[in-house]
Amino acid sequence: MTPTDVSAAKPSARKAARVRRDALAPHEREFASSVIAERVNELLADVRTVALYAPKGSEVETWLIDEHVRAIGGRVVYPRVVDHARELEFHETVPEQLVAGRFGLKEPKLDWRNVVGIVEIQAFIIPGLAFDRRGGRIGWGRGHYDATLAAASSKALRIGIAFDLQLIDAVPRDPHDVDLSHVVTESATYEVRS
Image (cartoon, rainbow, N blue to C red; front, side, top):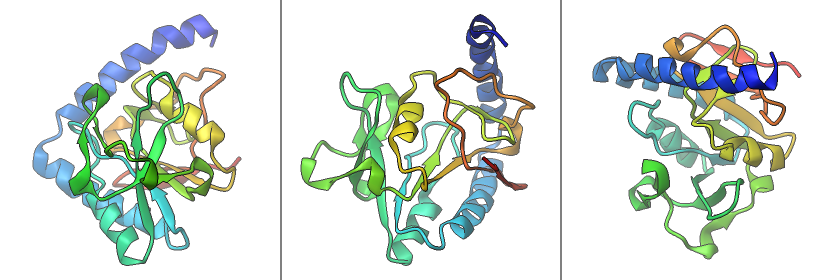
């Protein structure tokens, strides 16, 4: 695929995946999110610092993952979009302290005392609109997670979580797109070999 083809393919893939995800009934989304959380929690057995996201709209819920990590003595950090920066900034906080931020996201309050360096994070739980079984991901198109993952430790887990209906055969790829180490849905955990 040429760069022009990729640029043209991503918006339609985003829209189609969002429409499918938004069509899930709330009870289906809740049940699938709980199964996804169980699968993710199995991957986090030896991880002590986990980056989560606060779900936006119909995204996979992450609260059960947050509870699990805290119960095993781990740290949970949430991303914050920073002005004029591609990389996300992560803050150790609890979901109840997240506030409305950019792009309709819930983010940590700006407090430098709670910042955790990207290289300290051992696992990133990553949202998206569409995924493939080879670790490809289509997000909202701003490149924040790709820039962040490129700066992360090479040993950090990069776990995309999605509902089965968000899987597509092949995600159109740009050169800057960063592969995930795992894609987890309610039906399966796909481990990507690099």
